[in-house]
Length: 281
Image (cartoon, rainbow, N blue to C red; front, top):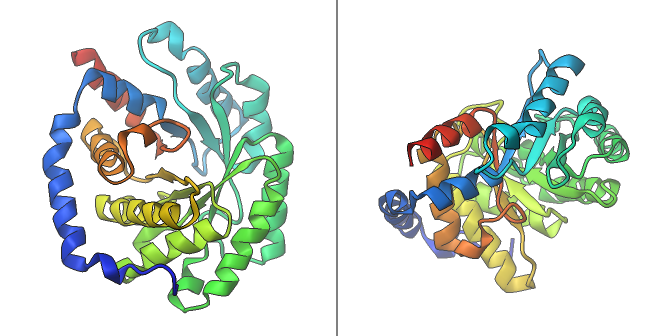
């Protein structure tokens, strides 16, 4: 990564910035910010037990959300496995909620590229607005970054008009610099968003990983002028968790980036936690 370098940011500087962000997080707790965070959720169901009936019920919860909570903005998207995209498309009645599909041999990306590409194509053809794929972490760790990049480029082409979110699986990397490099590779290869984790391994999303990714996004924007979104996902369950990621984006990328267009939170139970905190106000 000749034109991008994690090392120039410095290990000590990264940790000191994280400490500052942690200290500022509580100051960002407000009714308005909690509501904004709810509007940035990709409400997610990625279970082995998912079926057409359970996904239909899941979508109906989003359809009827405003009836139950008229003062809270609805979620940004519904994230499901590719085979359930037609179910979501048929039932979803909220115009601004995106249909999000994982694809590309989620969650490990360990199969033939032809299979990954075709799955992305099928998800797009079925009606996904956004497709979340996993970059091959093993290739990056092994130094085979050109092959990892080529796979992402091919899946980007397969998306058609759908946006591509590239999952790094940050918990898989032995070094923080790998997270930075994977972020740059994903963005150079066509990612519209970069995402921390699949939620299928531990650790999943962490504030430090998200901070490194936000710094990479800032570096990439300075170099290219392109604005890339950030999606922390995996293990985000509380309002305090969400506010930490809010603060990272605010401090590194700017408060104007905290919109569904550029910021998402992949979560299953976060909606209920935020609603509980909002009701306290």
